[in-house]
Amino acid sequence: MLQAVSLRPEPISGVFAGLIASARKATRDGLRLVVIALGLVLMAGGFVLAVLPGHLGLPLLAIGLILVLRNSIAARRQFIRLQRSHPRVVFPLRRLIRRDPEIFPVLWQQALRLERLVVPAGLRRAGLWRRRYFRPKRG
Image 1 (cartoon, rainbow, N blue to C red):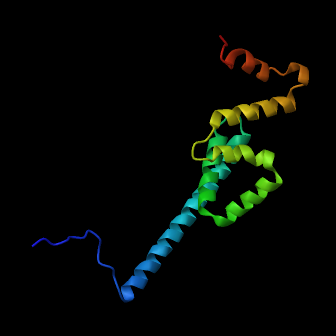
Image 2 (spheres, rainbow, N blue to C red; image 1 turned 90 degrees about the vertical axis):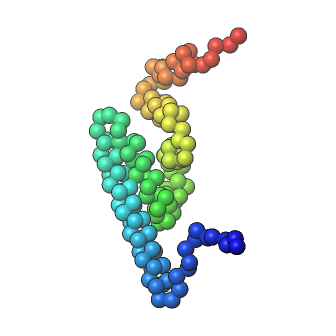
Image 3 (cartoon, rainbow, N blue to C red; image 1 turned 120 degrees about the vertical axis):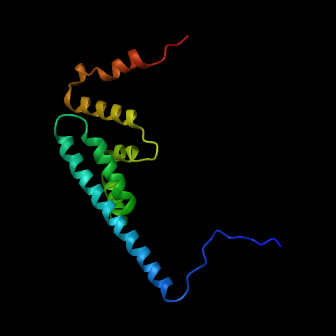
C-alpha cells in the first residue's frame, strides 16, 4: 500500500552519462575562467584607482584578489611564494581577504606605517591621538 517516493532522479546510464559529465565539467571550467578574468579586471582597476587620489582602489583590489585566489591554483601558489618572501607586505592583504575581514585594524596599521615612513619621529601624532581619545577610560 505505502510506497516510498524518492525525489532523486534516476541515474542516467549509457552514452548520455559521459556526455552529461563532460558538459558539466566544461561548463564548470568555463565559468571558473570567466571568474578569474573578472578578478583580474577588478585587480587592474583597483590598482589604477589605488594610484589615483581616493580610497576606492583597495576594496576593488581585494575583491579581485579573492576571486582569483579562490579559483586559480597557480595564483594561490604564487601568492604563497610572495607571502614567504615579503610577509610584511602581504600580511595586510591576507587579513583583508579573510571571510571576516579586519578592515579598520588593517587601515590603522597601514596609517601608522605610512606616518612612520613620512613624518619625522618628533611630529608623529596618530599613536598619541589613539591613546588619548580612543582608549576606554579607567574607573
